[in-house]
Image (cartoon, rainbow, N blue to C red; front, side, top):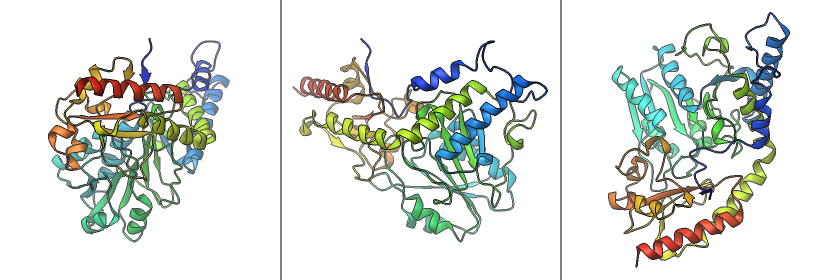
Length: 380
């Protein structure tokens, strides 16, 4: 029996349309050529496919296609944004503002920069997991090079007030970097309206393939980055390497589908969340970071008196996680939850449930029933 999948925040399955499209760019009878090989028709055709995908991703976030730099995913995009900007702008300031609950791809990169002499301010979230504009204002300095904050938190679903934060930064020369891995393809993202300078995204978070993502880099006025990967000057000198045509076609198709289905997806996901929660006895759980403005696709529940690992073992027919997939090997409580002020025991009892396009309402209800039945046994 295939488990009911409730871990969409970790990764999504590739949409069937995406997989079908990618298959045409792999084998001899398809468009498999190197898109940098412009001396023959096959190379030109591959380049056209790559540039179509670039436009599709750009359209999803309302950017210019020339502002999309291909990467292997949001982790690389975050590294390129932070380290690339730090190296390319040594005279603009050596201070970066982020939060204590960013993804490890941002936090670990900031820790590395700290060892190189940069100063990092890690803002503490409120009990809902949100960073307020006032906190950014109080931390801002003349030598602040960048503010790096995620749009949607990957463990809580909390949405940061980036419009307010970007408005606050309008008169400051610092850059605004946004890790939007959990937002792009799920929520409307308009980089111009939000006045974002750099934005990271990953294909496998919105029904595209793993191993491919992008960094939006503003062109006007230009944001200067120093490349991290050298060897050919691809992607306008910001990221060298042979482009994986099939993966880029996949992320482009996923972006197009996300744009077309975003409203329907969001409505369906909200219904699945409601159906799931309706099966749970409220005596057994508390919701962490309960905020009506949260992205409904992610919900974090704490089950007092029941360790999360014990509950998950009691749910062999469900695919769920205790938090970020990048932090699942540790037995320590989630750093995101402890940053909210949750006691260690409650943090260790917390499970993340995340919903997506291919979860049916019937599956959501059945998953809720199975969780409730397990809790009844474990609390008896």
